[in-house]
Length: 202
Image (cartoon, rainbow, N blue to C red; front, side, top):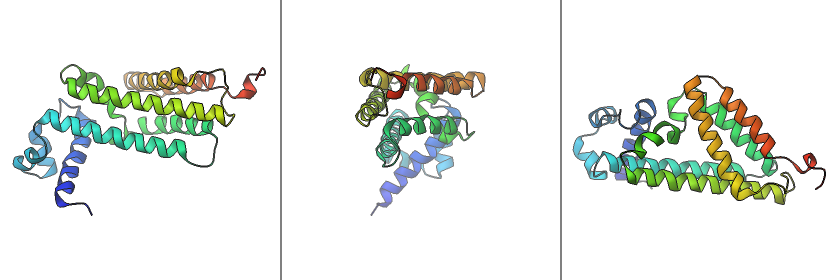
């Protein structure tokens, strides 16, 4: 059973997640967080030693949840591994263009911002993104094993590269306020993840 202490901590993190998604990390004031969460300053400092510590805990929670959801999507029974990967990219487009700030990628929102002033938060994001890239590499290898992805691709290189491309597409979509960067990324992903039937020599 979740304790009241865990519940209060999670409530502060959830409230902060929403504010950071809207304003960025620097733009979220501590007083605004306390007021929105309806918790006293003492409660905040009971769980977090500083705003930076709060940011670290927020990113750790976000990345843990993200990797868990990614694993559930890629490990599910049903479609082959390539189809599951393409479902992941399609979901990426829908969440990033939904208009719901809380549904959008926190890495895209504050990655560059926090990397300049918090080495600890930067390191958490760097480890998390490496983990995501590695998980995508494993999914590509699974696709080669189930014969849905061509053996000509190199999973260890392609997984991180695709993730980097989609992060870039998310940034460009924010700048252009269009879906075109995502659509370009989707078509490029299809080309980079050919099925064996697209390579007659296999």
